[in-house]
Length: 249
Ligand SMILES: Nc1ncnc2c1ncn2[C@@H]1O[C@H](COP(=O)(O)OP(=O)(O)O)[C@@H](O)[C@H]1O
Ligand SMILES: [Mg+2]
Image 1 (tube, rainbow, N blue to C red):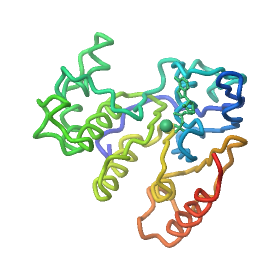
Image 2: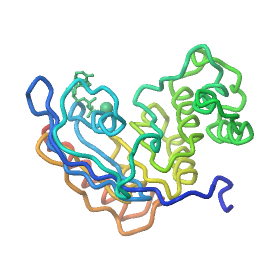
Image 3: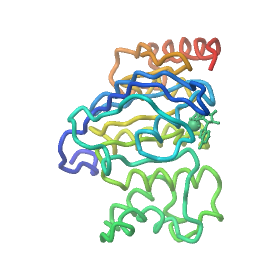
Image 4: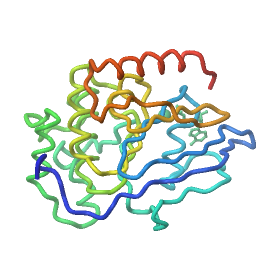
């Protein structure tokens, strides 16, 4: 139990998605994604290109459009019930405390939450002193960390994180990246981000999305979680930023 969070579980599957998504009959994107088993896949692309829509499609949530194609788990088992999701907006319930928000999944399933684990996570996201507070008394960054703790609390093999660190200052962001990669070790993670530095540091795989295609971006050869000042990570970050500035949605 090197990191204190490991739990026995079966192998986390990858996901294959291929198809076209249209809104009002107009194609938004063509995508061909291979989200690798037990790895972190970072998905980048211009605002509005359809990154959140991809997550919502796989989750079976409303997208406002029509998808023609398929998405399947690499183990051919149903995806339903195997994905935890941190949405782009924090979706905290305003009438519940931080602790109850973190435990909401267990409460809704009628399970007894592991309060020790919840307390530990809330401490690690730096909110222990705010554990009884309601979301409207927290800053944007604190709310995002509460939502992160709630997502990490769910013990699922697949995890979707939609811009999970976007409201955090640079130091806290690095801390939360380290926490998330430790807790989600061996999970299949799909992370949407606008931050090339984050993708270069955290991604086993980087996918860049435009309306026309999704393609894999070369990642540094060093193992994740990469050092912030690793030269190859810095080169990857710079080249990716350069590329993102040049592509159309
Ligand atoms: N529920 C919805 N109904 C109609 N259009 C939507 C809905 N959700 C997203 N869209 C549209 O789909 C496009 C892609 O949105 P989104 O996936 O949120 O982009 P991204 O996450 O890449 O910024 C946008 O043009 C957005 O307006
Ligand atoms: Mg989005």
